[in-house]
Length: 70
Image (cartoon, rainbow, N blue to C red; front, side, top):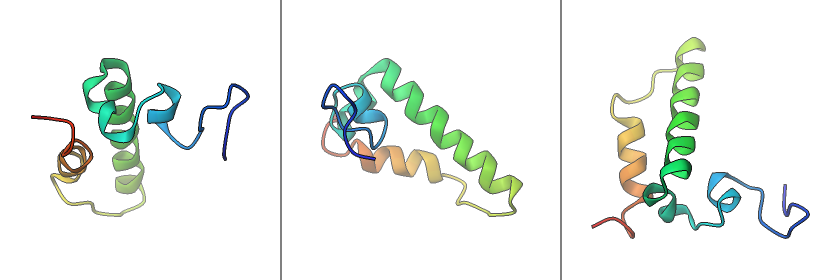
């Protein structure tokens, strides 16, 4: 992990779009990618018998966007 050839950070979806973490939520494609990834993690956790809180994804999205969303 680190930088991809063009110098961008490769440690997550936000850098892939040239965004800071909170900005992901206002970018349609980046937001969709993040939500899809979070849903996949939720499905994997369930398959492994790991119970996540019911509103886990929405709470994390709220936390991520606290500085950029009105």
